[in-house]
Image 1 (cartoon, helix red, strand yellow):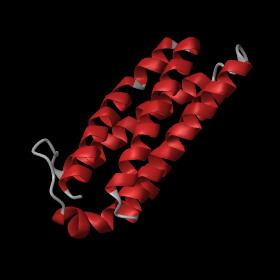
Image 2 (image 1 turned 90 degrees about the vertical axis):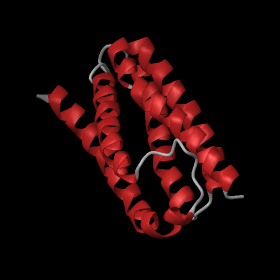
Image 3 (image 1 turned 60 degrees about the horizontal axis):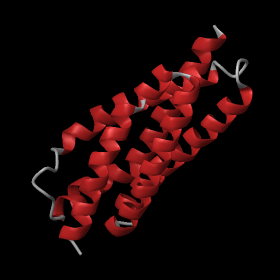
Image 4 (image 1 turned 45 degrees about the horizontal axis):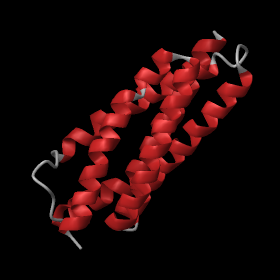
Length: 158
């Protein structure tokens, strides 16, 4: 039961981060964001919520798997979890920079750091549990796409 509770705790934490990030996002989509020039590969707005929900569940499940191995490899699990928490905080920060401050340039530089921390989290997880690391690959792919999208929006609206 403790293993299931750990996984559920991390999933709920990730979903809560997503929810609180969406608060600043929601109000700006029909106003400020709607007026921005966007590249042709910008997805429709309805795509973001389901994609992020799936990604938060996957990353939470991955981190829960890592947490469940703390008795086997405490030092590496703690190190990996620190990277996970840093990237999760940076994930939330992006929404506040892009939508809250309405600053695509600052959000672009921040998402580069976010991508780096996700990759490092993936690398740390891979040393402990390959399945957990693989669960982060869709997230890494989406943030790669989001990085190009953020940079393009900044470029088109400078």
